[in-house]
Length: 424
Image (cartoon, rainbow, N blue to C red; front, side, top):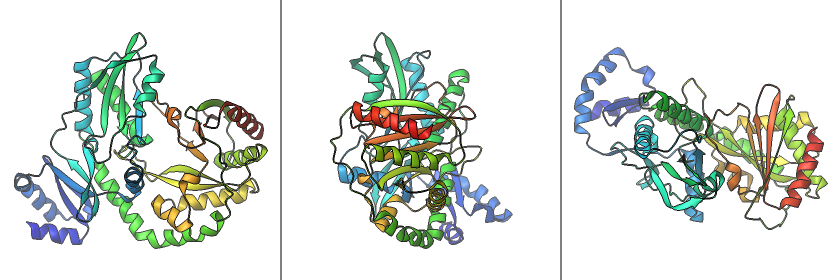
């Protein structure tokens, strides 16, 4: 049997025992009818002989930055996401217990952890059930829901610790509230929307879909694309080194612990991302922050399909903040960065000789409306960059803008005014 598996792997067809399932991934379309029949007939024997409580995948290279960041900084609270449930859904402990069990069954990637293997970092997927319990913050009474969210966004969880989802409930003011905490290692915005929609269906029907194992094929496909195109991607980013070598020194202002949030709405225009970046560059110049400055922006590597598989498929790209660019010129440059976004961010920074810690702006650009199913998400409560700006496509013809800074209220007001003036 092992000999047959070895022959299949030479054709990039892989078999992964996962609980009571045999997952076939890679170039599985190349299996002929005889091979498919053999695998079906030998499935039970294979699963019976396979007794390990976990299976192993190489850690996807675009997740390295998250793991390395924890190893280097020792900060295990960097990558938590928290979604507060609507106050119309009370936290019943037994129901929350059923919820967390259903989520771990439906999304097996939640039941994972990073480990060191013989060949480096590995992603261990545990096949034995994860006995998670909803967590009751009995000793704490939060002033309001926002205080509850703020604390959960600071929750410390190592990537080397099994269990990437928690359900937490607590008293917030006069009400009991609950929410779902996820680690960013296995959750991006696209997956979160899928997960929350599944939660809403379960609340209405008590039904769960079949377990999501599509992430195994998704990870493999993306890894293969990076392998095939790595030399071309490396050449491109190496050639960008000269462009980013002219960065001005970032301001040496002290970061304040609290952030200031402002929001406004814009009418849609062509090349909106480019116009926003150039407007921000000009607004910063008005405040005597001259460029070029470094910004970073998350981009998705995910192939959006009808069913969004679990996992995080986000890379971080550098953006140049320079008021001297014209729209057409900068848009061409932006598109070239996006076309070469597959190279992991630590390779991009190495080739360009960049340090993302020098970036003064995080730009979040969400061009599809977020469907949160009534759940609240406030990432602005825990921003790390001096400036974070989030553009979200709302109703047709409109964009919603959230501006958050950690350089004080006076600076926030001034940047808000300058940015609105540039954009309107």
